[in-house]
Image 1: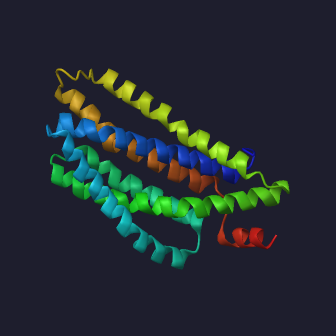
Image 2: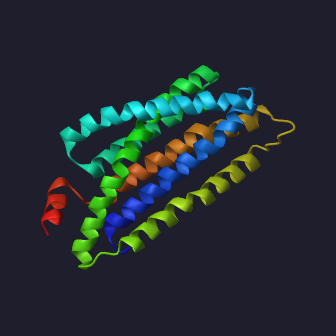
Length: 216
């Protein structure tokens, strides 16, 4: 199945996307405790801001999708939006700013989740046409593996960053705080950007080919 260019592009995109999301999710508590010097409960409003942005994004992206009519392109656009709004998270200094920024980031998050399944359906259709058989279980297994592999990438990034910045929870330095800031914003942004660019380069499914696959 991985010999199929579009499937490989899709699962690699999911890996980079999930890796970025895992980094941000795991970083929030570090940011609250060591950067904002706030109580752990302060993480709740930050996640709430993301949820608000996610819900609002569905209405926005559905309007965009009606114009473009291209699920693959929608994933690319959402990846770039995720990268754009993740990057500034490394440079904020207040809880209010993080809440607002995460709401903006939620716009991309909601869009990606909205179009991930339709885009995967297009990829599966192309795979069925190429192989003359349908193995949804295999495809779902490959997808699950790549998404779960993001746990390893998140752990590796944390290990490397904390090692380089000499992170010590009992005596957090400014250098260590910058390490936390980096794996909250800049590094996830690079993951999202890499996934979007890779998918843009590798994916070949346009509206015409998708329509042709549906007919076959």
